[in-house]
Image 1 (tube, helix red, strand yellow):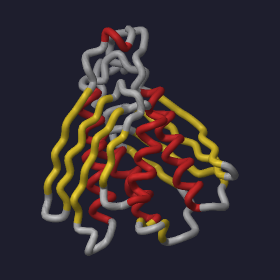
Image 2 (cartoon, rainbow, N blue to C red):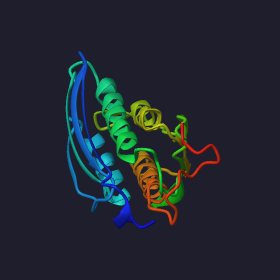
Image 3 (cartoon, rainbow, N blue to C red):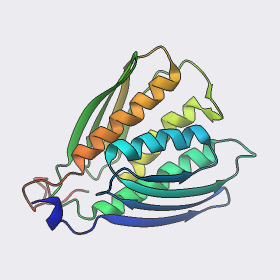
Image 4 (tube, rainbow, N blue to C red):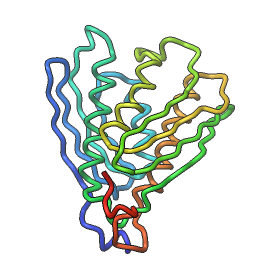
Amino acid sequence: MSEDTLQPRTAVVERETAETRIEVALALDGEGRAQLDTGLGFLDHMLAALVKHARFDVELRCSGDLEVDDHHTCEDVALALGQALDIALGERRGVRRFGYAYAPLDEALARAVVDLSGRPSPVIELGFRREMIASVATENLTHVFVSLATAARMALHVDVLRAENDHHRAEAAFKALALALRQAVAADDHADVPSTKGLLV
C-alpha cells in the first residue's frame, strides 16, 4: 500500500480552556513546513525540529497564560498536537506502526522508540541538568513528550544516552522522536490494521 493510496491524513484541532487557546492543523504527508507561535521561543524551536524531520506540515498557534508560567502552554500544545496526530491516523490502517531512531546533536545522543498501539504509555528519560532553557522549564519539556504520547495514544520511549549541553539534549530528543514517528506513520505494503487484534486501541 503506497502513500498515494492512503486517504488524506490531516486533522484540525481547536482546544480552548481557561488557561490556553490552541489551533493546530496537521498533515502527516507533508514536507516539513512549520508555522508555529506558542509564545515560547524555545518550544517553537523544538517543535520546528520535530515537524521538519518527521516531514509533517503543521500550523499551530497558542495563546496561553504565560503570565503564570509555561506549564499550561507546554502541556496543552502537546495535547492538541497529539490529538491531531491521533485523528490524522484514523484507524491506523496501512501504516508501519513501529518506529525507532537515534539522533545525535554534537556531543548529545538520543533514542526514541514509537508504537502507534492505541495505548498511551510514555517512558521519558531526558536527564536535564538545568531547571530552565530560555523561558521553558526542563520538566515541562519532558511533559511535552508525555502529553503528546497520551493524546496520540502511542507507546513512546525517549532516552538521552549522553549529553553535556541541555539545549543539545532537548533538541536531539525531539529529532529522534521526529525520525521515529516518520517511520511509524509511513505507508506499509498492506492495507490492514497492523495488529493481531484487528484494531489498535
